[in-house]
Length: 109
Image (tube, rainbow, N blue to C red):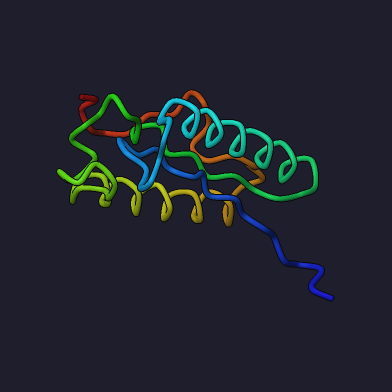
């Protein structure tokens, strides 16, 4: 029905705490597995994948004090990566953005 449509998977972001979690390590492991599985599925079926390499649990500055939501910096990086990925997908044949070798113009924490 929509031959020129591309589906895009945007990674499930990490959190320092998931609401009502019982085992943070298990929840995070599931998040990583889901992202990996869906990324492979999307790419092998013509879809696209957006990663957020700067938003990781070790970068606590990316999260508000509630440990759930992104801080202003985390939100800025999220929106930057989203915009960057859409531009990459429109102007190239890349299936993943950013690529594993790309890094941004900011400092890592």
